[in-house]
Length: 395
Image 1 (cartoon, rainbow, N blue to C red):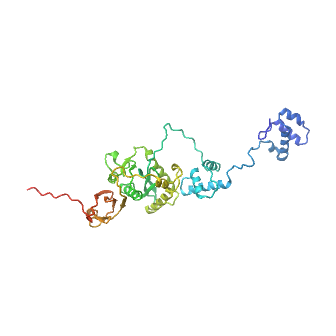
Image 2 (tube, helix red, strand yellow):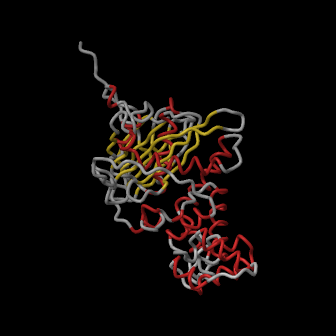
Image 3 (cartoon, helix red, strand yellow):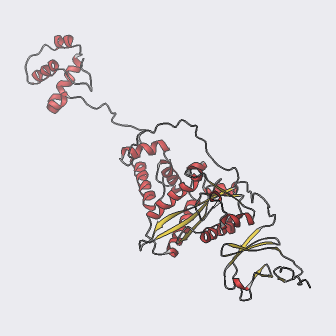
């Protein structure tokens, strides 16, 4: 039986051509034998007269109108948003596009994630990927329940304009994924790692724990020694922990943050030195921390951090607010902290110290090494160093 959208059989096609050419055809008998109606037969006659042989081929059953179709204006906005996100280095999947359209407010009705994905596929902007084989183990998200309970710190490399390699020390809060610090330096060394940590602590307070990989600048626990970074953390009440060797999933949030930062930097002008790289990183942190995050239920990292319950150092908690300063050691070997003068020794003259103060409790580091810990004596302006008692020689 010949139907609309189905090819006409040869007998019916020959009869249609003959009838259109003026020959006599017993239409009733033909239709009875071929199982079609006369209405269908004459429909093909009209098509043949109007279109020739093309009228005997199947036609699309697609409706002439589709009121529920995504408007062209909306599709153009989706494509434009995709391109803008890609050009600026940000994630540009369907969810990111949906949030960008929502924030922009240019559409009265923002399409769903599924609709945006279908538009991208239809416009050839998505390359289909083969389905991955499901893992045998049950997947479980690893997230600390409170902000500042765990920080993850690691570094990644960035190429400068002169082909030299710089390193970015990045610190991420495990609970909120807030980018706490991006510190540009020449290499992954203990002094710059400590500088990045103190910069983050000055803005966000001290964490309870710090998670690192087993790089020499971070930890020596698995090599039988204690790194200066681990020692410094313990001095201010922070517990350092390390990931299992060859198991980067433990520091997964930091690795994911590296990828986002690297893609963003790849879309910017290549920095010529560390100053320009640091300026780019400062811009990136503002943009990243105020963008909605898929893993945070459409909230930004800054919003999650601000709404979260805060915690502090894992042991020896300091009840008073934390203040971090970076005074220069005078030629007499002392620094000023909270209207007092603290002696460190002339050997440190001219160096930059890092002073952690919580109330009257002060811990001071010079060049990444512990220089002094004390409780300020408010009855004295000058806090002298303790000297070993002089023992008289035996007679």
